[in-house]
Amino acid sequence: MKGGERLEAKSTPAFKLNGGVLCDTLDLMHPDIRPWPVTPPPPREEVDKVYARRKATDFGNWCEDNLRYEREEYMLESKVTGEKCGLDFLHEMRGQKSVTLNLETEEGRDIFRTMCSQVDGVIDEMPAGYMDGLGIGYRHISKLYPGLVWCNIAVRGTWGPYKDKTSKFGQWTLEPFGGCANAFIHNTGFPQDQLPRGRGGDPTRSGVWFADYVAGEQAANTLLAAIYWRDELGGTGQFCEVTGAESQMDILDFDISWYGFNASIKARTGAWDPNLNQYEWNPCRDGYMMIGGQTDRLWYRIGMCIERDFPQFGRLIHEDPILKEMGARNALEMLTKTYTLTTRWLRDINRIEAEQKLFSVPPNNYQMRTPHRVKVLGRPLGYDTYEVMMKYAGIGQTRVNELKEKGVI
Image (cartoon, rainbow, N blue to C red; front, side, top):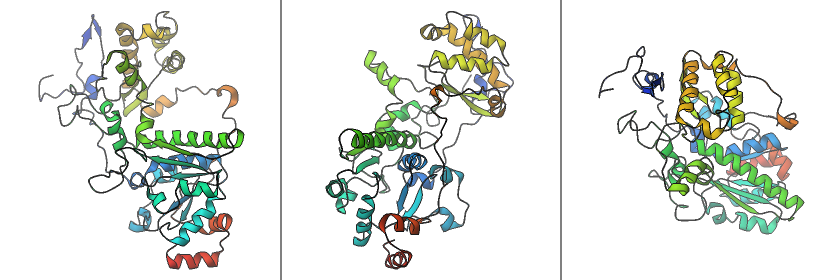
């Protein structure tokens, strides 16, 4: 394709390899035909550090009660502008009860200390040193309640040269600062050969707050492990730390391994991971569809779904003795076969139709026979203050109203 030349959607690209078509949907990926996603401004949920709440959401589904403390000035958009609350908020905040508490007042700190005596763990999402500066950090609370488990979750941690850095606007370092610290954004975005510099080939932040999800999940498991240690082994609580920059490195395990093997650096290939066949957001009739199989077992299942429409795909995956070996399947000829068939299948199907091809199978070992419970969805600011103050601090409605007037609650 020459500079400035536009590919027509009906054209057939002449990309051939060893006499065979390498890919017959490359034109559909061109931005003039299928525009690339435009990253919207960071939503309110991200500015409020969603990753800590992602972890809280997990615990809200697991445990009896999960409390979320907020300052009164951090009002929901729905209360400030009258706009409807988004589904993302309802989803991210499920299982959490909302309580307002001003920790910068002495009475507020006393209430916080009292509540710490009634809970198993505390999720701290404040900037490094903030809680210690108020005298209610882990080093202070642990002296009162040695069994308390405390987990701090931040983008770049609570120690080291970047712990106190803020953005150019003076905000906490939110995403994508974590992705910039560990080279995650090097992997995302369009490669240089698909888009010119400035529109493609540049590091690109993910469309969602990706580190927040990963860090939240890891922090939830970290806190559970610490509680298990306390109850079954050590008998004491402890301080735990999970960062967004650290957790994303689990996703970069292939890149790290290859660099350690021969000092090679993964090229920017968009969403495609060249270590896997094929792990990519592929163009389909109504947008993009993710298909990824990291193991032979997963690829076998993918083949079962696609062969409902393309019988040759089933024969290719299940009967070809070469393709049953992961190493052989990564050979270019075999990759071309599977990728070409998959892209042809995707070209004429949309995401809703593809979901109808899925098989329903019982989980291994029945581990999800009793699923986690979603007891409440996202709550308005301070919705549960009266209930929680009575249950965990022994403060009645009259006293709560007095504290509200004083700006404590």
